[in-house]
Image 1 (spheres, rainbow, N blue to C red):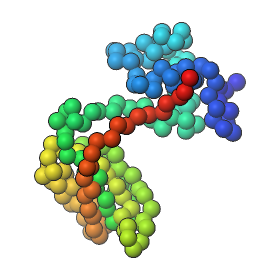
Image 2: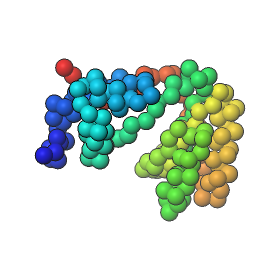
Image 3: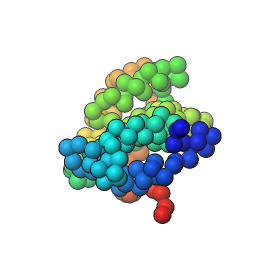
Image 4: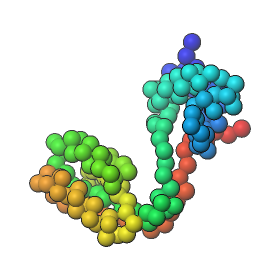
Length: 167
């Protein structure tokens, strides 16, 4: 028996307990899945298999560290937007996403004529000059497949949160 109803991805009580226990972040320990399992009275293998199942069916997109850029001294954040040949955007987007200066990259639909961009890449740096140097590196990587680009700088910091379940 699966804990998720495939038609609506409804979590069972154990899945809900795992989600509640992790919605503020994973435990900070050497073995976070074991710590989590112990706090819930489950085995680590059950916690890991349930989290994997939730990821496989799309209820959880990913499990990853979320750095606090400002605490690390990274105050310049620029969403670089690119007009890249559609035939190469997936291939080049993957390469851009692998760069150390890029936290995430993704394809988005164009909305011409106002919005010609189809590739987005979030670039972080200690200054705008550093972000601009990283963007120049991306432009070199994209080469002739890129027709134009821009950088949209963050104007304020918004609190990011993951999934939150009520009572």
